[in-house]
Each structure stands twice: as structure tokens, then as C-alpha cells.
Length: 137
Image (cartoon, rainbow, N blue to C red; front, side, top):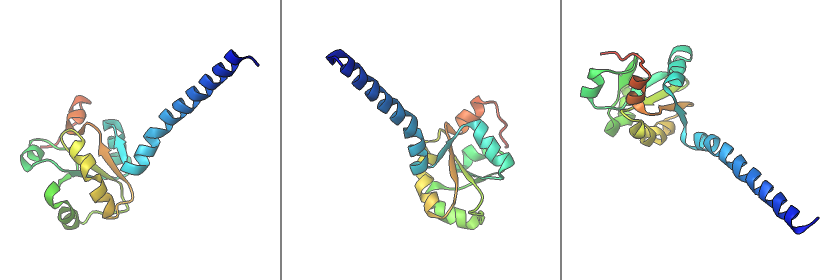
């Protein structure tokens, strides 16, 4: 083999490793930090899997419009709110906020409470509105 062929092979191997890592990282992120859900996926969780929906926004925002079946929980007292609501930890749980960032931050706290499967509505209520899905007032 000549030198250029070896370089081509190394470049192909490097490309294979980088692309494989790029494909695996989202899966690894989901395993570590919970599942990010699109509005469509969240709807499937809610309708077919009977997921609980926990809205982490302020009371005014919740009253202005929330996902169907959502329960409001104050982020500052999240653990107490979950205990008060008596949510079944065997059912999936969807965390919702305005943009998804607050839900992502609360994810680890909720997982420590023993929920087996927790998802975060990526983009939050804003993404839900963009997808033209209904809000309850």
C-alpha cells in the first residue's frame, strides 16, 4: 500500500468514528438526562400511555392556558407538590414549562422521587402553541 492509501483509510476510519459518536450522543443524553419530547410525542404519552402532566409555570400562566390534564406545581416546592398530588410513580410523567429550560432543570429532582419514566416537553408551552395543539383555560 502506498502512503496516500493509508491516509485515505485513516480518514475514513476517523469519519466513521465521528459519525458513530454523533449518532450515539443523543441516545446517551436521553439516558442520562431524561427524554426530550416533541409536542407530538408528548401527546402520545398523554393519550396512549396515560402520562401525568406537571406544569411548572407560575399560576397566572397556568390559568391563561395549560396542557389538557396538567397539574400545576411550584418549582420551589416541587417535591411537596408531587406528594400532595399523589402522582403514580409507575406512570410516565411529562414536565412542562414555558420554554423547556425550567423543566430540564427540574428533571433530576423528579427522577430522585422515584418516577420510572420522565419526559420534558422540548420548547415548552411555546412549542405546544406553535404545533397548534389545544390549551385548556
